[in-house]
Length: 189
Image (cartoon, rainbow, N blue to C red; front, side, top):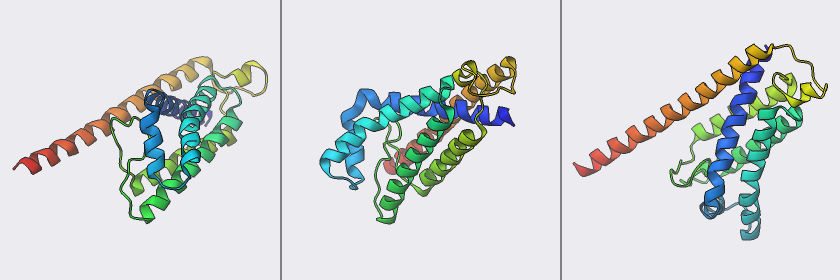
């Protein structure tokens, strides 16, 4: 079962590294997305908007290299829980806003599907925290964790997770593009 937890660890690492990296060059747009949630005062919104990409990059990096796996996974689950609460509050309010999840250049509207996705990611992070998959990790290199997966199997899991994240991203973006084309064609008729 370590391979499953290892795959989840790598997939979460990749997702949150990508999420953090996509926000950094567009911090002003991400600050706007955070403000649109209307949950925090202006100054707090700015601080949160500047902290979120850092948290995503740090937890993603820690999970990728396997350093402090349990702490990183719990921190990621806590961040996901906070995001989920913020999204849920705005959905209950009936608001239609960009989630701010990735790049502001490709807005993603908040939906209950976003809430479900975050719950699944948080559950995955908690599973990683409990399972502590130590394949290809600094935790194992320092003797803080026992590895039960061979290096070859861990590399195969890393490659599979990377392909899976890339394929999921392509499929989701293809579906979004299809919906946009359908809407555009419907609007021009």
